[in-house]
Length: 378
Image 1 (cartoon, one colour):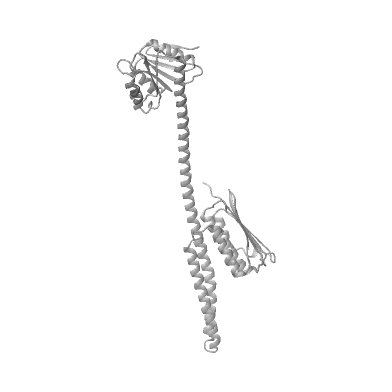
Image 2 (cartoon, one colour; image 1 turned 30 degrees about the vertical axis):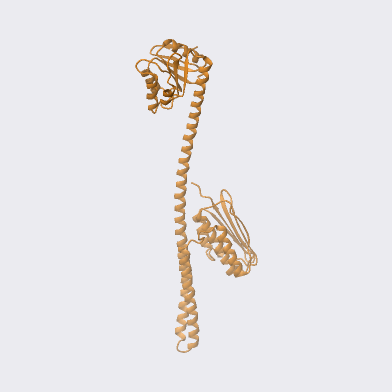
């Protein structure tokens, strides 16, 4: 059942509305005619008889569309439309002007003040519905586009926020990794330099003891002491260089690893079998840790393993980077080597990046190093 109320305004409600339409006309007969036609077609209709009432109604409850008569006393349709478009609350409401055939319709002015279309009296029903539905459809599409644009902007803002958080997190990780690397190198300097200095001191004391009775022997001990001193100095210089420099030097991890394996091949005559798949990028801190582990691992193999075969595999997935370095050398008792051969440094690097490290080795059965680094997320 449709309820119709006429006074300073007209309200018509429908159970299934196709849209909310505000009709503005100073002629009651026109209001009744248009209201009846539109309500029968399922539109919600509000009707007012003056421009001031139209402005108040549109502000209080913005309609989906306004049908606006041009010739009205006090405030004509052009003036009403200008006020509507000047208000942010009502500026995007489409306005269709109404004009009688015997009235002068200034079409240019109608569009200049913000009108989107016009209808002439007497009304042709199908034309009225077609023009109204066209504007309502455009209005609905504009709302959908606006909602999608708002959602897109919110998504972009959220992505920017997450990106900033990720950059800040990566920055903190880089600083922590750099600090851990410096601490590790400092410990290495302390350990290696301490050992060299002890040996150097023994050589010097022995040389002093033999200086009078066996000068030739003393000289030999002094030569060894000189060599130990040079080795210690070179070790310190190399450690300081490592502490100051980026080991990757701006190169891709694959390129830096290739350089390591070439140097290893040149030194040992062993060409490592490499399988490297780095299709997914990881942070520089992870790449640096991987490089250092491979570097230390190859160094240990070169110095201690007496291996003939070396396998290296690096692979990335959406969730982690995995590294495996294995040799067929003489191996060692893992329980008795928790800190030696750079193993402690490897553990520290992996743990600093929330990774996992597994080292398996037995005497006579080589050594296998497996490290996994998770992809850091915010």
